[in-house]
Image 1 (cartoon, rainbow, N blue to C red):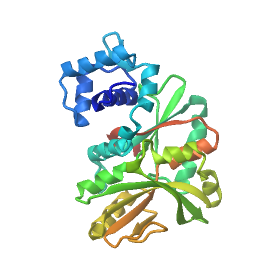
Image 2: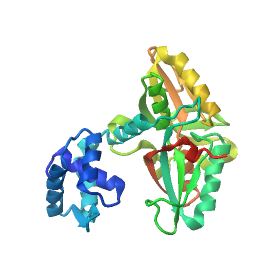
Image 3: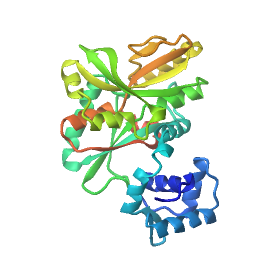
Length: 315
């Protein structure tokens, strides 16, 4: 077991997220974004220790990468310390999202899905079904063929991550909190209740990815007959901000976003709160769930980064 110090864990996390070799200077910059202010020299010290432990290795002058042992250690080390890591990552992406729904400009957060090239058309069909059924977060996606994260023989699909909504709300002065990811029961085109909910602040993995990997969705049924189980997120805002929130929602819908499923103080089987407003929105991960249900190999990085809205919204 490595030293139980957050700095070591954070360096391993960064290397795991980015995959490509990374030097001390870039690591120092990314560590600072996460609240760890370290000089390049200090980072080099930590890297030497991680090299000695066999968790990282140097790739020429390009920087360090994780070893298989390092990947294993990153997954298992300090589970308690990793609680809240997912929501922290998403909140950083929300902060960096500069999208203005009124002008249709600015950056949005996105998910990057990777599929085998020979199954790209099948995956696109699965994505299109979700769009037609209006159970995604945004009405478009973009196929990407030039990206260092996409291996040979594969294709990428970029879709907007729903954390973009949080960024828009924040920039309009509306305090917003991502509360839960859940499975939403849909009967004949109408959402009825949440079957399961997992809090984002109490988990080490993304709740929606967990539901997908466990086979707990039924998007194929939903897109074909209007009845099934979809993925949705629950956010809450102060009840006093309802008027401003509905104004933002209307602008985002005009820009091509598909939400909310519901909005109010007492929504479905969620706990009612007279002082907080719950906003339920379908997740962009429904694209992935429908693809998985069709047996198409797909790997998705949730919150892969931020890109200009125009890069995904193309006429």
